[in-house]
Image 1 (cartoon, helix red, strand yellow):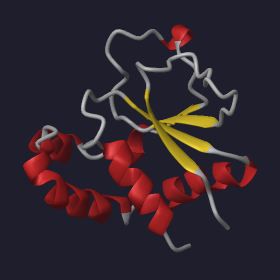
Image 2 (image 1 turned 90 degrees about the vertical axis):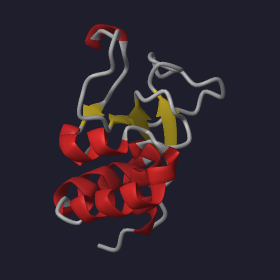
Image 3 (image 1 turned 60 degrees about the vertical axis):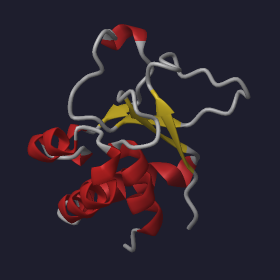
Image 4 (image 1 turned 60 degrees about the horizontal axis):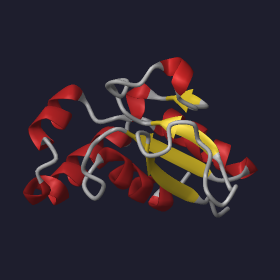
Length: 124
């Protein structure tokens, strides 16, 4: 089964209305709610806090791109213990596109990018 996974910064599209009209199941994958956004003002179908990196790993990484490869290794190790959550996310993809939402300012080095890579390579 091929699952289409997109990534969006929640601040760029809080209401979930895409320009092309192609939306998907929106999953917030951060441990903390995005600062400055009210839950009523944001379209999130599911918030899975426990799929995010541990607090200690998140603080260690601190979006330092020089730590990116090591961050992914450590995060993937944490994700190995989250099969149930990973399968829940992938299950949503059976009905259409999954959109992983994140709040970080860095659009190239964040947990959603790493999670997408992990999900695309996950073997049930």
